[in-house]
Image (cartoon, rainbow, N blue to C red; front, side, top):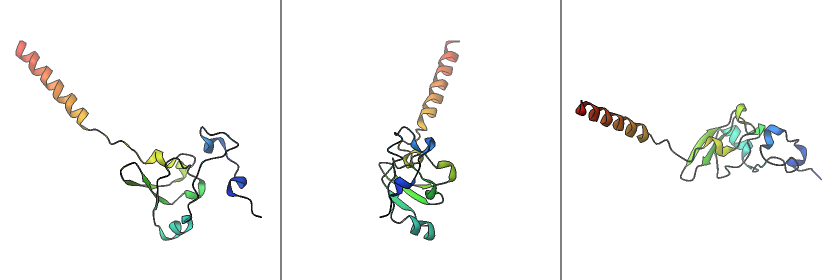
Length: 115
């Protein structure tokens, strides 16, 4: 009988995050991991809470952010983090800077009008 992958792994503190030591890191068993590495094909996943393991390095994932799948290329620095950390769910609202600038211009015009 072959031991499971989680029994073979000795989770370190960097892999655990906020999870208890006896549970080990949360990850999803991706069946096509070797095929994706060999053929350079992205793996589509909704598992944002999946911990990035060392054998994921060099593999491309398409991680769902709630609306679409965003590409994530796993590097050595990402090991121990979650897939969802690299697929942002909120977009940058660039209009805030524009509104702040126009508000500043309006205040300057009011000061000039008073003088």
